[in-house]
Image (cartoon, rainbow, N blue to C red; front, side):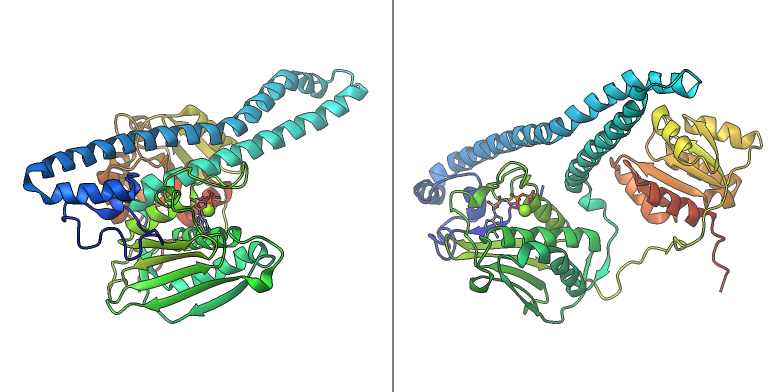
Length: 449
Ligand SMILES: Nc1ncnc2c1ncn2[C@@H]1O[C@H](COP(=O)(O)OP(=O)(O)OP(=O)(O)O)[C@@H](O)[C@H]1O
Ligand SMILES: [Mg+2]
């Protein structure tokens, strides 16, 4: 479980009951669990007495359990809400397509065409576009949710945060310019060990939040300041400070909760800060917040520097090799995934099988393949076992493996991906990324030095 972020209420300067609470009672935890100032003082006194200390611990544990259950319920309700709207028009549009497609087939098969048929074709195309928009929206929600489960598995490399911040500020500029001036105070800092995409997600979230806390129309009166510096203990600090609305102390304990938002419908999902927290804590860092209503907020990200010689993963061949017709074996226990892969990769010669054993049988029977698109975790023999069996038979085919995953990693799968030079694509996959991975697998291996 991630540690709770540090939140500071301006009404309680210096943090809660600093120095008064026994070590077993974490002041940040108490704020997060919603204990008011009076209760916290009482708990501090009771926890200080040996005869009542166990009782205090029990009360806190009970509140923590209730908090977790209600967070899980809120998360589930939030997910359902975020998915239900797009789901409604995806299913309705697909139903419309299924119902009316028959007429299109009749016309294409030679039935006499009427004026309505032209209109129908336009409507079908529109329904398809809308269904796709809905699916993209659901994909974005699921991708955000997967961030929580997946941040631990990110592949990490040393990253200089300053160019990442620069590009995030460029992205956020459209939102910022109407509201505030932008001050960049980016001192050189040591690299941190992380994933550039994830860090961008964090900085964009923080800068957009800062911008959105400032009313539009008076950019000369407001400022968002982004600063980097190295702390005396070697950690890298990235600070996003705004002169916006500030955060109501009653909201402060909740801002890192998934789906907590004070923004109107359609303006915020409330996932931003919870994702920031998950990403930063997975990197061994922290997020601190200070805020004063009417004066503004400061979010400070603290990250440990990358070790001098970080472990480097063997680089795969670059994505630039042009794709050419290839013999592709698709191994996925979900037939619909196989079907859409075959349709998408029509320029290649695609063979579908639904299990690792069936794939091996094909290979053993002498069928030749250039690329294997393989589900990572399947019931029965896993994709990893298939890879090992293939590597023992034909190392060149093992180099053609691209794994597909829905995101549920076991420790064994994580270790496998770290140790083997294979490609990994996440479902739902992007067609361009799929083609690029196939092209990489088709590129000749680098010549030995
Ligand atoms: N810089 C800030 N100033 C004032 N309030 C903030 C600031 N940053 C966050 N908040 C408060 O915290 C809430 C949660 O922020 P978070 O980024 O998690 O979600 P969101 O911005 O509402 O939606 P999303 O990021 O998903 O679009 C916000 O709705 C807002 O109330
Ligand atoms: Mg946000």
